[in-house]
Length: 365
Image (cartoon, rainbow, N blue to C red):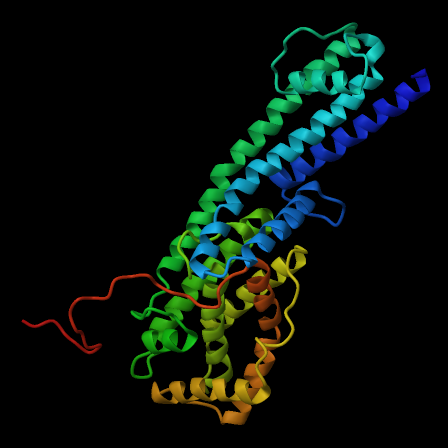
């Protein structure tokens, strides 16, 4: 190689190292995800597309969930491997360009080999840099390797802490029935026209949405961390409480509903941010339901609210308000479920209480 070729190859290696290291910093440290190319974003995009394609071939829902659950944690190991491979290759180009200052490098393979043992701080000593500049660069690469690994390992407690908080709240989404729905959620938390227990729930879920927004926008890889139990997708749980809040805002004819408004705003902010990550596309339609079916579904909601002793707006007015509210979140929420292969149900998996209880039971004296 000519001296000019050495310079070009070395410069290309420097560009690769800088670009990958910037991706590491953006992903792990600053958590600012701009519009420029990101190796991490492309890694998750392509690997999830391939892995989800395999999952779609599994017909049994339980077996499919067991297959999909490991992707989130294992993908982090894969991401570290991708970063390390790119950095070792980039540094290999640098050393190839510097081969006149390294004893033992006679081609690309030996340059990448020297880069690998230096990056991983193995240091066999069979290839040795000559001169101050080459030795300083070797130290920099070794430090680069230590910092990259340390940053990714240090990220794990943050990720699993956010994941645990998300899943712990989902465990409380229970209506004493096997399957939780927005209607059963309303029935469970509203008694004799009293909305205060429901408002307290909405307040807690508002805080949950804020926490998930902060963690999942900072670390988008949390999108693929699934619940370890089948039928407990966090996107479906979010949909249940958001639907309940929209029913309150659209149908119940009384002032206030500040807790429902707060939950609605925070939940829509969350799903809009996930849409902006580029991993989710809006779904078309509402599971293929016709306008008549949507109207019939809302009629059941409307009748439930009336049965609970709550003041209701005229049906047509409430239905139009509900359509406006759902327009903001239903397409992207369904798109999230489709992208993540989430089942459209939420099951509690809790054992039933072995004795019969009435909601108005009082302790005896």
